Image (tube, rainbow, N blue to C red; front, side):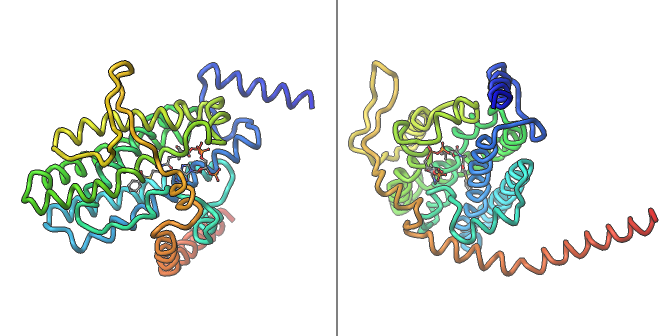
Length: 316
Ligand code: BYC
C-alpha cells in the first residue's frame, strides 16, 4: 500500500515536471483505462466520421470537389488507424475495440449521428466539425501521453487542410446564387449547435475532466475550448455574411469573448446514449462494412502466418 502511494506520487511528479508518459512506463490502472476510453472513442469518431462525408463522394458537383472529398475521407481512415495504434500501446487489442463499437458499447462523437442532407453539409463538416476538432486536438497534441500527442501532431496538420477546404466550399456557396446562399445558411443552422456539443458537457457536469487535467491529458476544460471555437468561428461567419443561428449571441466588451445562448444538453445526452437521428444507421453501415472486409483481414492474417512459417523454417 505504501509502495503504491509512492508510485502514484512519483508518477504525478513526472507529469508535473513536464515529462511525457510512454507505454512501457508504470502507470495507474485508472490512467490506462481513461486513456483507452478517450483514444478509442476518438478513433471510432474518425472511422464513423467517414460515413456522412463518404455518402457524398458520388454526388460531388465537380471532379475537383470529388478529389478533395476522396482525399479527406481517406485521411480520416488514416487518423483512425494512428489512434487505434496509440490505444493498442496501452495493452488492448484493436479487434476488441472494434467489437465495442459494433455492438454499440463504445461512444463516438455526437456529431456523426446527424445526417448530411445537402452538399453544403460537406462544407459545414470541414468548416465547423474539423474546426472544432482542431481546437480540441491542438491541445491534445501537447498532452502528456507520448503516443497520443504524437498521433495528434500529424492529425492536426491534415485537419487544417480539411478545415480550409470546408470554409472555402461554404464561402463559395455563400457568394453564389441566392439558392446556394440559402443552402449554406440552412446547413449552418443545423450544424451549429451539435458542433458546440462536440466539446463535451459543461465543466460542472463533466465527470472525467478534473482527473484528466491533473494528468495533463486535457490541458484545457470543455468550456474553455468551446469558447475558443466560438470566438474564432463567429469572425469567420461574419467574413462570409452568414448568420450564426443564436439570437442570444453577443460580444462581451469586458471579457473580449462572444457569449452564446443556452445549449440543449438534453439533446446531447440523448444522442450520445444512442438515440440521435442517425445512430442506428451509422452502426448498421459500419457493421456491414466490417463484414464485407472480413476477407481482407483473413488474407492479411494468412499472409502474416506464411511469413512467420517461412522465417521459422529459415531459422531452423
Ligand atoms: N460525443 O467527462 P466528459 C473528427 C461523453 S473526430 C460523444 O467531459 P471527457 C472528424 C464522454 O465520453 C474528432 N460523447 O468526458 C472525423 C463521457 O462519457 P463516458 C473527435 C461525448 O472525456 C471525421 C461523458 O460524455 N474528437 O474530428 O473528459 C471527419 C462525459 O463527458 C462527447 C475526439 O474524440 C461527444 N462530443 O471529454 C471529420 C477528441 N463529449 O466515456 C472530423 C478526444 C463528451 O464517461 N476526446 N462525451 O461514458 C476528448 O477530447 C474528450 O474525450 C471530450 C470529452 C472533450 C470529447
